[in-house]
Length: 156
Image 1 (cartoon, helix red, strand yellow):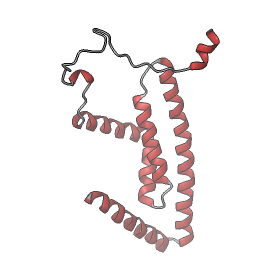
Image 2: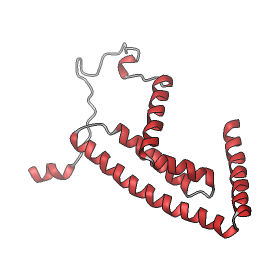
Image 3: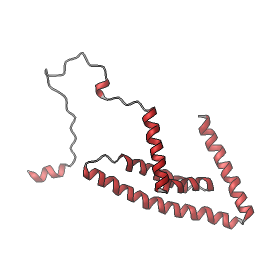
Image 4: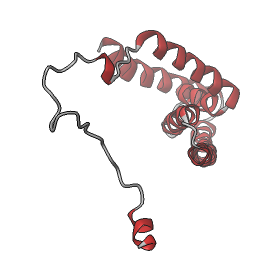
């Protein structure tokens, strides 16, 4: 909790000091233009890369593959877009780094290793066996989802 409080108080303060320093060193118009241009360019790049990633996810699904890497890329691109529209130079640098595929790949690898080290995954087979008999003797309960009901109606 302390880290979040520090992040939400110290980061805006550092961003403000940095923007004031840039404005003092150049002009306030340049500092304002810098914030606006990085926001607009960053949002456009995030949108473009987000659409490419969405296309990759759809292609993976159509091949029957799980789009885990593409989904992580999408999350990082969404984070980049959110960071880029916030005014500030440090957040803009972080956002643009997230939009560079090489940097995003490295961050994705780090996230994957972190989750593998710290996450505990349990399947239903890890659960304690039930002493109750399933209903109707040896029947099993099967979970079913209808993907596309329109196709079934056409077949009839």
